[in-house]
Length: 124
Image (cartoon, rainbow, N blue to C red; front, side, top):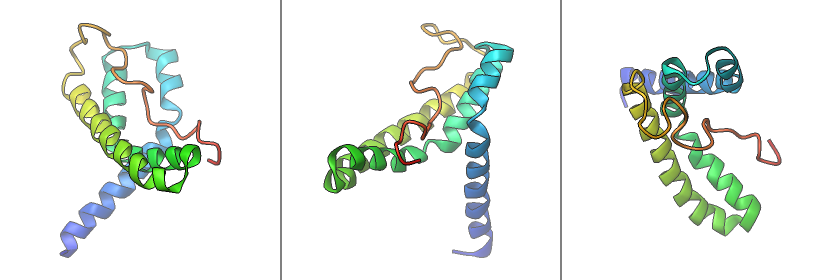
């Protein structure tokens, strides 16, 4: 990998980590001040677009805690890949379509939980 590509990868990882660290307070603050509007949809989409990959690790962790290491490495990994790609895709769609309300949920979240969270993980 050349220096330019490695710099882009490092920048993307650092940016994602910074965004995910700040993201924990977004849902409460945004809901209190703006309700579910286009800006909330844009922020939720950006957060899910940049942090969707974290589903991989979260699902492996959750499945390992619930069903053991073998299940975590197989079922958890599979769930993480599928849910991570899904969350990233939904995030991209919400970023592109943020000015337009969804016919079924308006500006509300399309997936639950609205943001990826490690709060329900016992050891985190």
